[in-house]
Length: 199
Image (cartoon, rainbow, N blue to C red):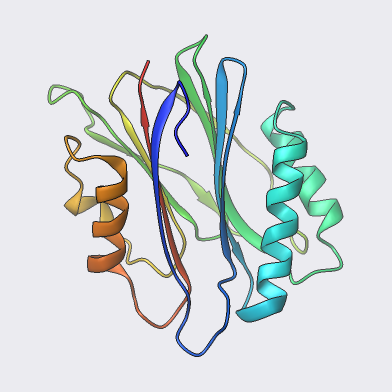
């Protein structure tokens, strides 16, 4: 889904032997901003998908609240499910920044467009826990974001060195497809969400 702020691409794979994936993504624009998330329901199959679907619905419903408040809403409403791990990012075009948070093992990286940027990549700090079961101390970090910077969120079906293959001149969909093809573990649900900032 593309918006005035971002161009995005999504690639996903269902675990062999399962009828549906437990991984979900959110791309939710709102005035002067966009929320992005990658969500992994615990386990596999229908119960994992149910938890991930509910989390995606809650994120979208509360998109304009603070990130910590959004995660607390999810935690409260997912208690009767298996729970999820997820990473969440909000791009604020007015401030030119990205706020992000990771709970569990859904990885996140921002790859800078400028060759002179140092560091060229910034990785999301992940905190152990499960939304709906055992929530860690919540901490959101804020980093600047500039035109052409690329955000990538991946569930744990993708190997951790996925950012090595990213070429920031490629379209987001091509990046997502390539990461899935080259870095999928093959024995788990896998999801790749790529978003390039256009402002």
